Image 1 (cartoon, rainbow, N blue to C red):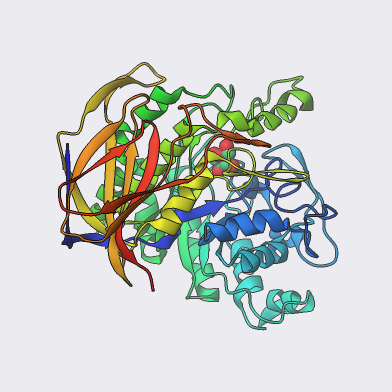
Image 2 (cartoon, rainbow, N blue to C red):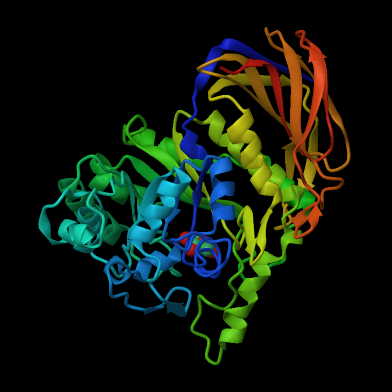
Length: 500
Ligand code: AHR
């Protein structure tokens, strides 16, 4: 098996925002997660310092908030100022205290060092409410909302550049769902008003790969959009929490770029492929577990629809399957860096997140280490990488379909600001080592940082470190060098990297 790349065959420079994240007012993501006033590990603003440090370590570039389904009946004005108005959150059917609102979120982003990305209520909300939110955040001092922010203690505008109009408004499950025509009209009015308040904003709108939806959206509103929002969760377990096994997860990677292909085609048909980029602003291998909530079945109790949400946080569920899938998705985003400019792992804290919180500390799940490897070890310039004789295995998806899965996924990168190469190399095979020769005009020392655990089922938990980054040194590089990857592993191989 051979992998080739050449220094000058550049696919593009990836936007760091492909390593972005998402946090929602759902279960223990905000309250009792990152925001936990009174916990000895929290700072003066009630934010968990251990969580903030973990976020800083993976240089979270952008954090989408406050939902998700939550936002489609959220009114931001209830969550700012002295008087916080508790609301019954009709999406998740629990009380929202509104003690964590826009200003707390902005403070949190500042402490992490990331860009805020606000998703607006396009369910029960109006274009006016959305643009009022832009006024509150971004105007210096004109109008009641900027003045309200100043009165709340924030003299300087929050300068929120990234905004999304709505969340999954195409779905029957979403509060205030819309049909294609309604969506085209609402997004146009919302985008117009938001850009009139602050033309420096970059706007996204909820979409999916459906042709009719996009025709209405792009015809009406394409001129105002900078992004198109796509969500993707592969393992459909929101009612069962019965996750796919390792091979079935690998089967999901067989056509991991299918949405990019479709959306790219649609944007090209409208001549918008240079103007609008794809934001996978929610993605994860596994759907969140929230049974019996999107229903009006009589007699369903809170014990049946709230308590089971705790089971999202059984840490042993997040194994090397999640890690290898996550790396495969990030390889795909890198390869499509001309059109995929943002992706937000959903969510960052608790539920299916890469950081789990408990009162005395945190657990970094297997997926956290993938972000660590990609953000801190990989290059920003993506090279065209091609391969010969990669083994292919037939694997069964959860729906029974048999698909062919290449067992090796390799992506070569270089660095815009210093010498060297970094190669993301994924071995999807559950039980076999894979060796390949790397045909690359490079020189210098070779190091490998990688995760594999001792089995496909390896995981991390409180007092249990099954998946940690390991390091090895392979001596000096020469083109055609053979590199061997352990089974079920995610590796970053660095060659002659000389950081300033
Ligand atoms: O399952 C959680 C949810 O997934 C998010 O709130 C929503 O946006 C998506 O459908």
